[in-house]
Image (cartoon, rainbow, N blue to C red; front, side):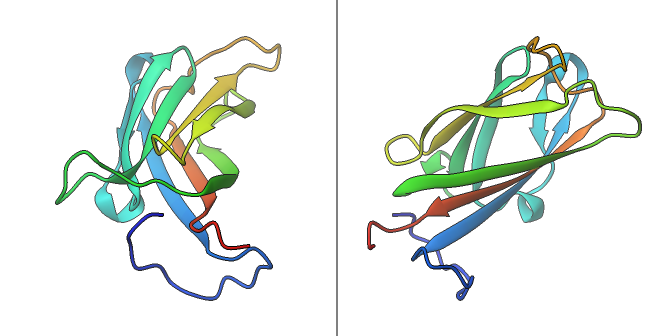
Length: 137
């Protein structure tokens, strides 16, 4: 269970739901950068594994570098791509997740034909990650 102070009352039947938000800038060759701490609270890091494939680690980059948050399980990931034009990557899927052990989520972007590809350089990825913070039913 992540040891943080979260806001209460999300009005859901699932107990202890946590929403973590990420704002990620995409540079040349698909390189991801977390924009700033205020827009990425609860995100430790993000790396590009291959074309359009990224692993995001939950946690806190400061003041405890390397601190990883673990959660009971992943509920959902919702995403939007901010781009001035028509994005080349209309498809998004979660490839794998290990939020209970490593605090990580791996996701993939692809073209309309299903080819793995990076989001456009200059685009911004907006992610909302919903997690269960407790094993309480």
